[in-house]
Amino acid sequence: MARFDRVIPPGGTGNITLTIDTNIVMGKFRKRTVVWSDDPDRRSMALYLLGEVKPYISVEPEDSLSFIGVKGKVPPQHINMLNNTKDPIKITKIENPLMDHIRYKLNEVKPGYVYSLEIEDISQVNGDYVGHLSVHTDHSQMSELIIMIRGQISD
Image 1 (cartoon, one colour):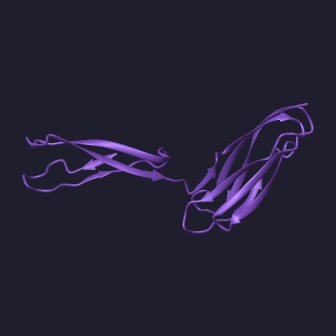
Image 2: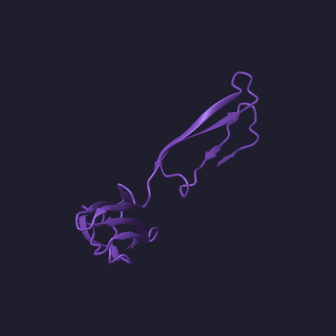
Image 3: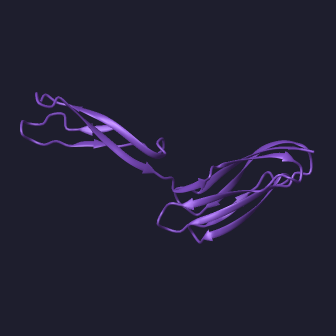
């Protein structure tokens, strides 16, 4: 979104404010806007807004996992949760509605800033499942992270 002074006197200065909605834009971005004027020597000029939007807490490599394979032989997977703020956070609880299919182990790698979550399939029966883990934190802006989980287990 752009806000700007609509009228600038000859030889004067004006203000242009460019903003982005960080609820929509995530990761690295490059936005361009064109400023038009009645200056005969320079009718238009491009302005660029460059940056990177990081969530308060990011999940790497991604916030979804798939367990596909033979029962008892599906390797465990790891995700890291990274606190991108200056103040430490705590993971207060993890809800696991898939307890018949998965087990998790939480490790605090760098207290308050980096957590590792190891998740393994423990299914005792063949079939497909879909669900999520709810990771709760004490962060005021991001109190819950959802980790999507899908499984396809066979003999």
